[in-house]
Image (cartoon, rainbow over all chains, first blue to last red; front, side, top):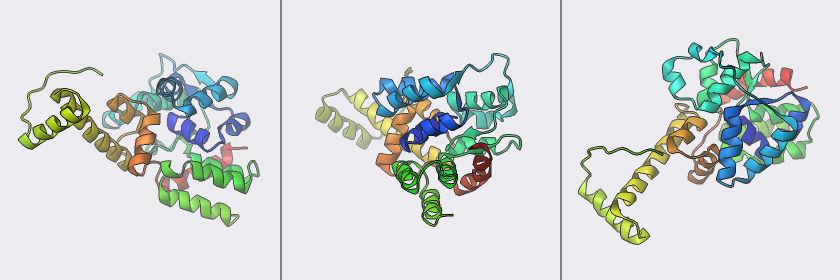
Length: 166
Length: 100
């Protein structure tokens, strides 16, 4: 999970549930970006994420031997921050099932790799609702919380699917 | 954030604007100019993030701020960020398989 996935799932109120249902891991750079840098700026989400990470999410150090970044074109690599770079490396290091992110640039970079799976916070909310982990009310409230941080067409599509009971 | 000198000719109007800001905000003219440049950089970085040319994390690094602040700015300025519809649709099958 990158900082984008972590922060949006927290804002939507489903991060703790997600972390209790799936084995979620983050690299150290993501912890720094979302918790340490956020706490320095006194962002409330950073304090709440810290609590959830302490209890339910594993922080993993990217191995010094990890050379996965060499697979990414130099130009594309320049567009990514430390957090995303470490997430990409960690994905291969621990043979993860998927990356959770909502970052357009990061997802378009990993889209080039057929062997990298990903999904977004909006996917997460919809699937949690579909599988009965959260109610319709909770899923719509969660989406509303991140409404300003996701694309309007995506937001409207997920709301429509949930309201329509798809 | 590190700084370094750079030779630059600045339009007179912008210098006048910096002077106005300087007296308004009780700061020196150079600081006022830097603040104006920073505001322009913020807008440009948000635009690049929205277009998918820069990640949120990289944008925060370039502005020497946090990812939380990038979200606050994008919300305040009404800049759309986040995965595209194609990316959302592509992620649905994986989410279905992974979330149990």
